[in-house]
Length: 232
Image (cartoon, rainbow, N blue to C red):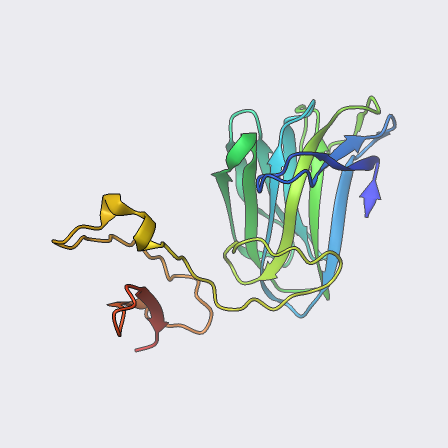
């Protein structure tokens, strides 16, 4: 849903190399300039993430709202990659955190996570700013300035996972994996063997207590490495 803005679809190259990133363009009105999507779901932990790139506007707010008591959000400067007010929370939201990750071609993946305690919806908002105010920015737009957005996603849990394109529908995530084809990486394979160093943070794994991870080698000569979270 748009307010004080329009969208130019497929305006530029996205982080995945395809021309599927949209441009969010502010209207010429004195108003907030934003886009949002609502997901109906029971209260609990949620994460909203989106990949943004500066256009004529380089400041934005990435916000989750419960559409009832308040919101949780972060301000991002896309010219520097800096976050501010990164744990701001109002109303029913608790445990709010945020993160930013540089992507390809000048994009940043910005995410906000928190636990919603009220309402029946989670809204993900992208609000443009002219850099002079707060997330309630109301300013006179010029009708042409904007920024680029791709891969917006609202999901349950307190971690931004890899992007799944769903349009207006929903999708259940299957197990994810990281695969390296050792047959084409001669630089890491030699007759004397090699070492793989894996850093794992299992803090926010749903249904797992104790933050315990098991890393094991492959079986039957398949040259695979397995990472498994477990209770205990």
